[in-house]
Length: 429
Ligand SMILES: [Fe+2]
Ligand SMILES: [Fe+2]
Image (cartoon, rainbow, N blue to C red; front, side, top):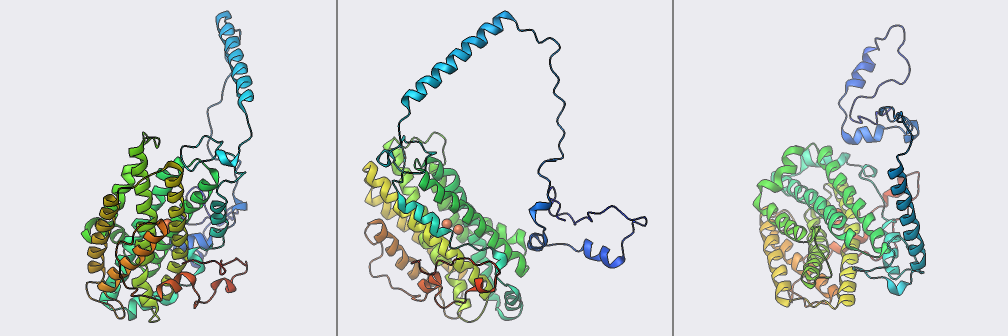
């Protein structure tokens, strides 16, 4: 049985020890075998074996005071306090009125945020329902062939691409989780928006698990891979830009009724949805997909395809929220600030592409990656209702959108006992 207090410890037999407590050697060997996190999870037993009543923590006994007689002054104060509470409750009941959809706002709203319906933003609820059609875990996908491919088929140059793409993505997904969960969600004042964002927070954590699973399964040095963004300037450059945007909005004193703060928030939301998720992520999987197109690292690529679907929805949802905020609050963006944002993102992407693809891999070059950034950035700008930042950018990887739609991929859910919907009827582009 899994030890829930210390899940990484070796499992212990549940029954009482026999008269001779020395277990058979074969059992000792198996028990002592180091477990990977994935193996520990896969081997874990159902939660029904766990006792939720016994926490294993004993608190000191609470004793009644020896003298329970009330002091007369204390009694008077208590009575006044009770009168005050009753008065507050009465006034609160007088002010209760039904929530109307028209009362809701994306931000700075005053309608009850604990009441889901009536919906003002039914599309947000649809996003939540659709997100639940793309459910998987990294353990659902067979990675055995990827281990062989990495060890015996990838060139050193291709290994460099694979490792650094994962090193970038895994740090980015934690940033994405912190942005939506800590900086954005708390500022929303309509619950239908927060509910999808709560799902998004979970998905970002799932993505982090997926990269960790790939890194561990392939047998890469985790400490080295996770530190790479700190020591490789071309990876750090992108993370630094994202951290700058996150820091600008993750402030407890951020009042969105202040126009300057509101503009800063909208700009950060545009950056995260349209660039960070909508362009960098969307395009960020491409080097590994190019390996997949040659029959290599297919397990990793399949994992990334499921992540890509989530990211398409995150980007699309974020863009819609941004537009709604701009509409409701009459936000006018500074065209130069938008231009600067595209430019600094492009520069960071160029540095990154030249580092990741310092030598081209078969079927994919740094120039392809950079041009594809520009092509997808144009798409996100159009979705935002903004001018295309890179007119005439070419679509260097026309097969990329198919990856999101998975039209040519097998359906791994067929092999599972439980049937899930795969969202096949949705437009993931
Ligand atoms: Fe993600
Ligand atoms: Fe995301």
